[in-house]
Length: 132
Image 1 (cartoon, rainbow, N blue to C red):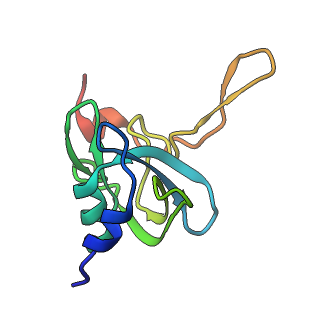
Image 2 (cartoon, rainbow, N blue to C red; image 1 turned 180 degrees about the horizontal axis):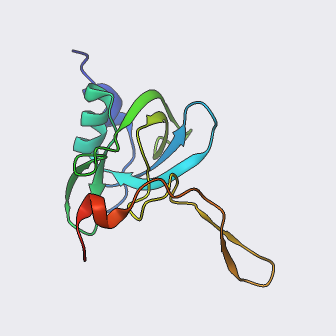
Image 3 (spheres, rainbow, N blue to C red; image 1 turned 30 degrees about the vertical axis):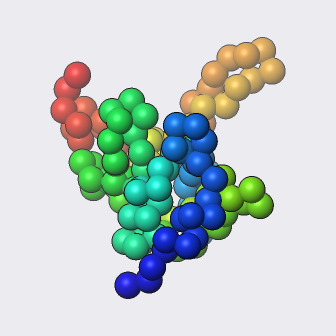
């Protein structure tokens, strides 16, 4: 297994120890979601080739699809010039959005400020996560 320590040491994490991570469909280029990674989640992503994030709301590591089965298999991972943000081209199983849409960016904002659902709902979140 590769040793990613040197690479991770070069990365710049914010004052909370996080960097921005964007997941993008490897085939279509569709932006699926934006989340955050810390050192450990970046390491896990690089080693396992499955997206792992840091949940700010739960303060814990979060392997995408761990509960839902909607995994993100890494096809390519790029890092920006400042080494503080990554873009992952992924094969998305199921939906990326926790409310059931293929992408978290499923609403368009009109010129009048109105929201229009333009994305595809691919699962029922109550069936996957249980009723709230």
